[in-house]
Length: 102
Ligand SMILES: *[C@@H]1O[C@H](CO)[C@@H](O)[C@H](O)[C@H]1NC(C)=O
Image 1 (tube, rainbow, N blue to C red):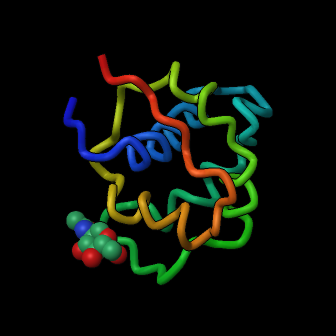
Image 2 (tube, rainbow, N blue to C red; image 1 turned 30 degrees about the vertical axis):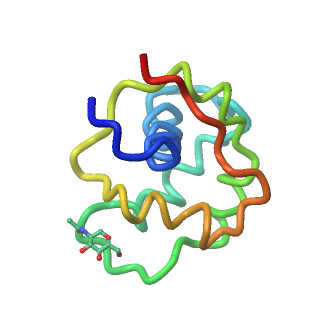
């Protein structure tokens, strides 16, 4: 897996992990609905200028250390640049933790 940026990977896996947690209401501080709220902005070819407030709310609550365990799959239809933008556009107080890559 490419090492692009830990932050991008983390937010991406946030989206993926929560999507994969079928049935779970909450995973690592992130609600299932965060996927629906954030995916439209993060998708490749998205025309949205900024993530929705609902998305930002849920991203802010993420427990990044917890999400690291779900790392491993970044879907091709997710734009990493936009994922990177999430933490800035949402003004996350706590920058994503770093997952060890190896
Ligand atoms: C990803 O998002 C960035 C920023 O919005 C945009 O400039 C770029 O063209 C996008 N890339 C793809 C493959 O959609």
